[in-house]
Image 1 (cartoon, helix red, strand yellow):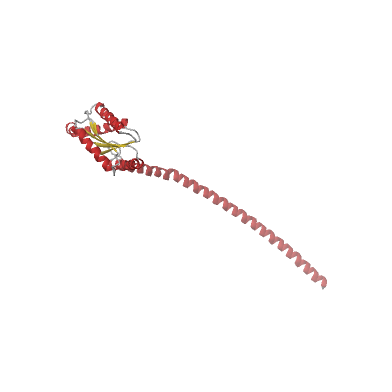
Image 2: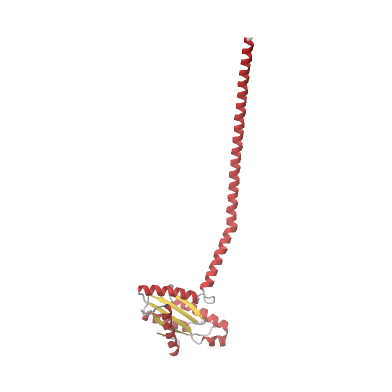
Length: 239
């Protein structure tokens, strides 16, 4: 009958609406739960990330930082071994020549005065023969200490071999070069250290000449002047 069909239609419509409403509620609840789980996962990820960053920071602090210090110290030691004389702590021959070459070029290019000194301890072989090589080493170290008190920080000074030393002194004239050399001779001769034999030094001086084409030209003239000082009686400076 028409009334029955209408009733069935109304019943279906009501059931569909209730079902759709229930499904909509279920979907909404599922979405809320899913969102809560996603938020929880995100918080967990952030927590794990913070833990990892803290672990990396601690690892860097306790592992990498000491390693960096160790590498830096090792590099510094290598540099010192490559540039310093192991006995006196002065520049070794190679480092002295490299530094002197740079200063020679600067002075040559700009027309600045430059003095070269070659220094040799007098009768040093007899010190080794009479007092032993340990005493000879102590004399070399003590001599280096005395020279540091005379030369400026900007001067280039090194041990070039055995009992021979060399200095490059920029921006001074001949009279100043002689004065510095005489002060070195006096400081060496007057220096007394208990247990060490007395020692003197002879010095050859050469001034930069416009005709010098290389550092070797300048040093050769200083070396010739050194032999002149030796022949004149030692314990003196000569041009």
